[in-house]
Length: 139
Ligand code: ZN
Image (cartoon, rainbow, N blue to C red; front, side, top):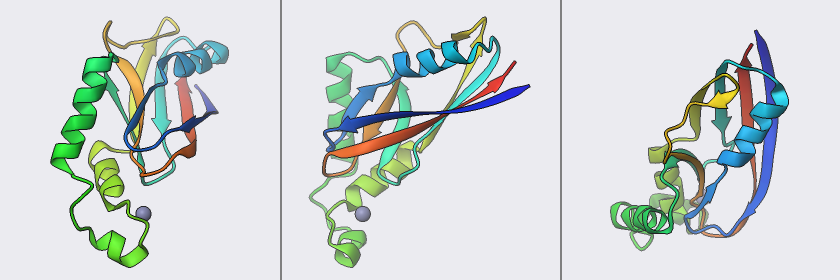
C-alpha cells in the first residue's frame, strides 16, 4: 500500500464561494499512478468545507441561499463579540458541512456519480488563499 500527500492551492472570493476542484483532485490521482484505494481531501482551516454537489449555477446558488437561510450572517454570534472578525456564521457553517471528504477510486478513476463534483466552500467573510490536502492511499 502506498500513501501520497499532495496539496491544492488556490484563491477564493470568500462569502460562500463554491469551487469545483474535481479535475484538480483527479489530476493528482492520475499523477500518483495508483489504481485502487481512496482519496481523502481535507482543509486545514475552520472556515472552509468540502462536500459534493451537482456543479451547475442553479444548485450553487441554491446551496448559497440555503446556507444564508440556515445560518444567517446577520445574527449575533458570541465568536464575533470575542474576536470582532465578523465571521461567526462562517465557522458554524464550516463545522456543519465538515472539513473533509473521502472518495474511493477504482481502475485509476474517482468513483463519483455522473453529476457529482467535489467542491470546496470558502465560508469566510473575505477572500482567502487556500491550501487543501489531498491524501491518496492505495495500490
Ligand atoms: Zn473567526
